[in-house]
Image (cartoon, rainbow, N blue to C red):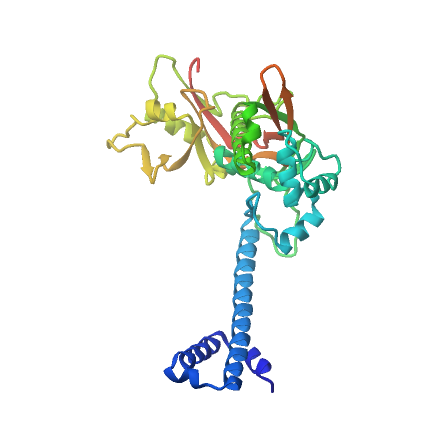
Amino acid sequence: MTLAEIIARMTKPEITARLAEIKGQLEKRDAAELDAEALAALNEESDLLLERLGLLDQQEQRAARLQRINAGLESGTTLHTFPAANAPESAASRQAADADPAAAPEYRTAWLKYIRGVELTDAEKRAFSNVPGAGAEVIPTQTANEIISRIKTIAPILGEVTLLHVRGAVKFAVEGERSLAEIHAENANITSAAAPLTTVSLSGFEIVKLVQISGTVMNMSIPAFEQWIVTMLSESLAWSIENLLINGTGANQPKGVDKANTWGVNNSVTVGAAASLTAANVQTLIGLLNSGYDRNAKFAMSKRTLFTDFMPLQDNSKNHIVTVQNNNYFVYGYPVLLSDYVAVHTAYLGDMKKIVANLSESVNVKSAYDINTNSYKYSGVAQFDSTPAIGDAFVKLAKGGA
């Protein structure tokens, strides 16, 4: 058996121990007395050991990476990677770029230069020509993913709804309250219960934000410019989406939770305009929510409503109705989602997962130079739609006139 074959069978601890022995031999005072043949043998052996150790390290890293990916897929987590614009290109990134030309690092830098009117290198021009309909029409994959990721961070209510990422129109079935299992008489026919599913249809409405920056954009580095445009567009688009999830009318726009029902005595509580919110009002509201939706129910309200209407409340035992845990607020144990787009003195309670939304993964950015102001204008366009699939999953509390 050759030395290489022997080392190929060695474990990582064995390799480490052998390398330590070789190191000790070379550090001895009489190492200089080693003949050329012995020294060459030690050098060859150490090279083979180090090569094998590197392969074992790569295998461990690959196994750990696959474990993380599998865990992410099993939990339904979307994994995003955003390499730096000037990061060295790996074989994996080149393979991804071959499948998706808009993911090529050269296209990313080319696109970020193009929308600023900066001259492209020959490599960037080739990458630009590889993407059909490029120009300002096709945003680089990493940049688009980063915008989507930041939108979700800025508008956390997106993480509470059932969020899809599908291009164009989509139909989706949402489960309502489960029907009960029935007692079966022996030998009798079994009749299937009606499936409590509600099908919703979503299209796509354009949400557009225009931002403007002076001609100094020409002097910005590529990473700095990308960070600026991603931050500006993602913040504006996220606020628009959050507002629509709350207040969208459903008439030529997405529908929000405020239009989940026609509000009345069976699904809402109204407090007099001159009156103050009471614990009894909140208790009545909670009682209106069907118990089938209670497990995942959360409150949605503005920070002002929380602190001016809910915080002062106490029960008969002088216990606070609103509690705080690690900067998270709870009303009678129900988590509170804070949004500035919920009207003041108004609150909703319900299962947010019964709101179905579709946010296309593609975000388009278009640019134009304004000669009158020596500035560049950039418009970000996202396709979004939403609707509460089951109106009974929500109840509303509001002051009169609010």
